[in-house]
Length: 251
Image (cartoon, rainbow, N blue to C red; front, side):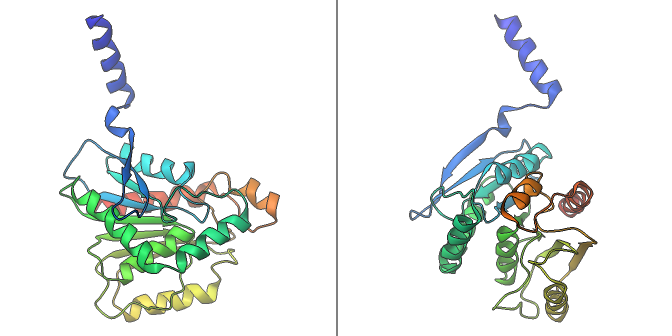
């Protein structure tokens, strides 16, 4: 039995599988909801807050957090809707998103709580990434002037009612957007670039010609066809934008 256990442990080690990558459900304070924590082996590496799409904290958001942990970065996927709400229909997703946006102080508190959890897990810098709705969330956290080393927004809205103030944004900013995304039109992209430039932000903008919304999510094309939405997965844009994130984390 001992020999079997040792062999099994060796197989796990060789395959890259580790119990340290198992998800841990963590409770946020003050009844703010929950998050899923994925611990990497290193305690000195950067750690990442992951914010979900408008669908809620579903398998896709958790997958991205797990990918980060597998790459060596502890990650926490925080539920910005508070109590496990997820949607499969755009009407429900819109309702959940609008309810969250109506209480920005709660979203900020959830994000702050997620950051606090990560700070107890690592001595490294804290980053944040978000998809769609989550992309807008992390950009707004950067605009708040939080102590973030970097934020990355993937097909997220770029508009805001609280533009970044000069010198306030501490984070490097990576934005990956689709050139054919009607939810993030060229005018919005241009205004965002001007906002970041005026505020002195270190910005990297990746715009993928002909690419639609939700291009990082392999399930997007089917959902787009089902509901008549401009959603479509693009493997090249997904790969290139993820590689840019990895470079940001490695800097």
